[in-house]
Length: 529
Image (cartoon, rainbow, N blue to C red; front, side, top):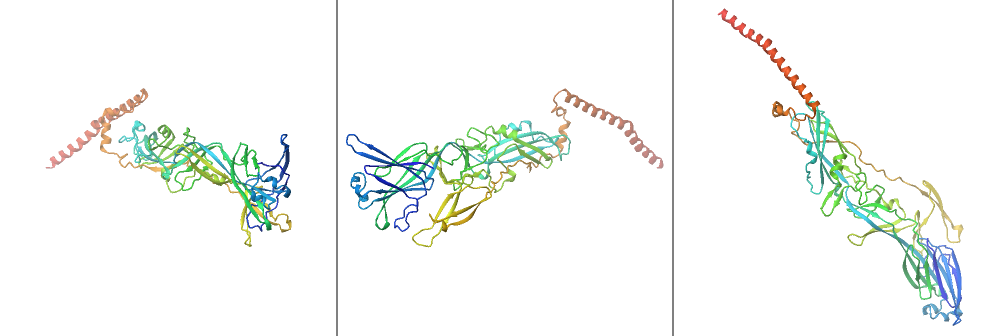
């Protein structure tokens, strides 16, 4: 709503009438449909002491809403038309004593400045892990996590992780297994998104002023047609015509506007759709629990994660399922990502469209003024609104659709009635049902996913695996501290004692029995011969 103040200055008396009803439908010229509004009028007279000329100013104040039209008649006194030659056009003065002024509040659009912006993608994390059983070749070194990582895709982000003290399920030897993984982070479906931070808007209202004169046979002639704009927070006075009519606009305050904050839109989409409803990182934020932690570096032409090695190594959790078969389960302490094992054609949810959640928006578009300067333009509509379509069979009246505001309750109904002006007997009523649908729920992957490595030669027992333990230098590998050294010493002493016992048993028991058996059978055969 806004409050225009109209000033009419002349040196003759004027009669002001408010037009409340619909304009004549029999006129050949289609004039605007006038809204029912209240009008406050006032008259101010001033006298010039030097010329003794008196000037009268008529002031009219009214309020009109969006898509409403304020109308008023001005009837000129026939005896004083000659005195208006200096201020009014000659075409008005010929035979016109009635003027119709119309002012329509056409539209309101808001310009939101883009304070911050960056390009990001939904991370798709793919892992390739190796489970190293105890014993056998060493496939997972302790320094594996600090080695340089290069992926197949040069634009993807790559990092190594190392996970010791794992279960040796499926392995032939008891002990602890190790897992080392290679993580590849790449854009999901190669789609790019832009995160923008929009500030407080600049609201611009557009008005349409028209002046008509009444001719013979109730016909109308357009004398003046003008459109102008007004900015919120600024008092503005507009010269409408040559007859001294001025318009002063009061303070324009938008009833609806978008909240200041972060929004996102798809850079690959054909249509511009601004979305919100999910936590989005600001330009200097890099949280893995918000949208926008995999970003595009334009200077380096690659995707990157800030402090990605530290964050991904800390966020990656792995446990073995069958180490011998290279089967494992994994999860990540992060949000808004897609596991590589679940890759598909399903679109990732990045928020609700603003135009679906904010019904007061008519149109929304992105204005690119330069490579670094952007604005979001929003055209406002009335909300909540009900569309009513009127159809006529006569040729002189065209079908039309209007939108009206009505109080609404969730899952409730309103009894709406429509009637011609000042004809309540022709009233038509209908029930209008207001229904609400809940917004879709956001499902984030917080589960363990099964995967299998591709190391075919890992955990295979061979002769080389056995021979390396015959080297005493390998016996002390992995010994840290006196307690572990004492345990190794006791194990060596135990095996030495076991070897001495076996040697004694063989010498004192097994060898004599074998000698007696072989030698006794030989003597018996010799005696028989």
